Image 1 (cartoon, rainbow over the protein chains, first blue to last red):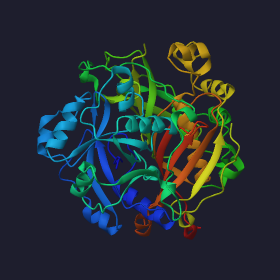
Image 2 (spheres, rainbow over the protein chains, first blue to last red):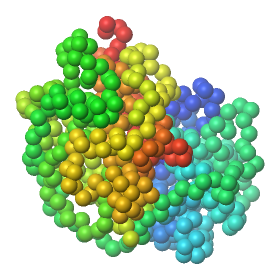
Image 3 (cartoon, rainbow over the protein chains, first blue to last red):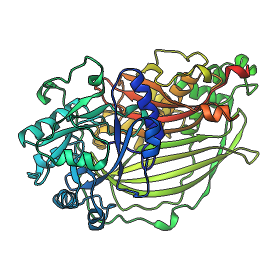
Image 4 (tube, chains in turn red, green):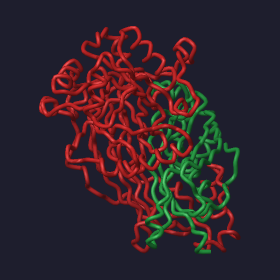
Length: 387
Length: 157
């Protein structure tokens, strides 16, 4: 009901999900299919029916949008929905989203309802949001912890809102962590929408292990009072247009040199308790494919390089590392001299559990003394507003 | 920091989808300081969040945290430990979803999700995809990612 493909911050692809379903079925789990819900993106030309049929599975498509009560999954909405909203907006008015989705023949569902900021619960608690027009909430979410899911379930029960489960999968192996069991057949998005819109249909959220033969869905799960609370709500939602210097994006500049020494490799290996003999045992390494020790790829994480031109983002008080994409092309050896070339690849914003977030993606291209690229490292830094 | 040594050499033909490799890592303040000493300037004002409670408080954090690049290094090590000495990381994508705090008891999981037999049969590299994650004692997965790893083949020996 809730999974993300290889765009945005996801590391998974549709065929990977399908292969994973096959492997889970061999172990006795029951997963019939999944719904892809790309963030703020819906490409109508994509169709996975043929691919899905090869794996005897169902792949449906929806979208995840960002509203003023957090993220919302939208299934089966008609063209009127897509014409009504700027899907890149990170604070769409939720009442409009739910109403237009319904009026255009689809349905909207509040995603990960128990998650701070990006779920409905905190908005209800803090701003007395009524959840007008909200008929279904995702209360069992694979990316939420048990406490957050318990609170989401309690919210749905209090407001008499129906509940689904979704894996919120951004990685292959998390697909199916949480699911929804339907009593009726679901083989198309229109059948899914019909069931979710009907007040008499039967569906229930469950966890993957509860699909095993003989396993039961518990009548009740631990309440939030029985669980240890974990939330870290910080910051506030913001809505103004992001200001930054767009002219620096994509400009690669020289960022400095790195002399790779045996001492530096040894020190890095000590710091992370590295024991792999290809990095620490010269006798072993001599017999290996590189005829000597090489540096662990992670050593580039510790290299200090000059910054690319600053996009001067006018937002936030603190920044943290949000993600990293790394490609390793050639081995790095002791006595290599590497040159770094750095650039800002992208600046974009989203909402998360801490409210508005701005991401700056920086790339470092590492080349050796022969002019060969040895690695490409991208780092996403998230900027947040801390009160 | 880690309770397991490097895994044995893994070969492409023997890898199965769904196969798991687990190790435990507990990054202490001492580990963090040692890691910082490999790259960070002691005078850098932003490193307080990694070393002491006052610095963490300043950034609205419950406890001092492990630097993102150290978590990335720990993930990198998980992957190379799983692969064995003759394996090679082709690419790695990591998502930092929550902070890793000092002394978190991290269950580090590498889980095989795909084996590219078609590419290998066509004479290409023997590539395996794995999901990697840390799970803390609170049941949260603060770091998750995917890796593509090239493994040696038995029949090439």
